Image 1 (cartoon, rainbow, N blue to C red):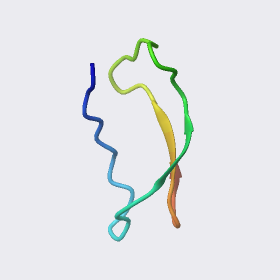
Image 2: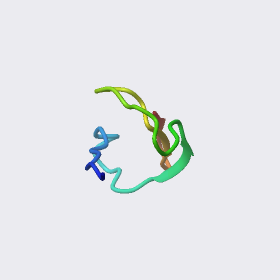
Image 3: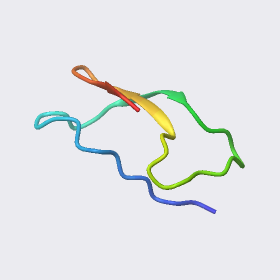
Image 4: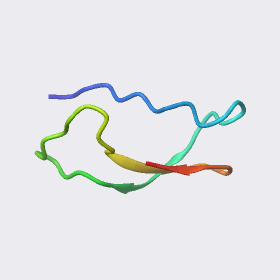
Amino acid sequence: MSVEVTLPELGESVTEGTVTRWLKNVGDRVEADEPLLEVSTDKVDTE
């Protein structure tokens, strides 16, 4: 089952980023607002 994941706004001029680490494995249960991955951009790193 696939689910769309929306990233929070990371800044006015940030339009893309790179997934640097997955925090969940395939099959893991995920609750609302729980971090799934870490994203890195040229300006921001976030969960």
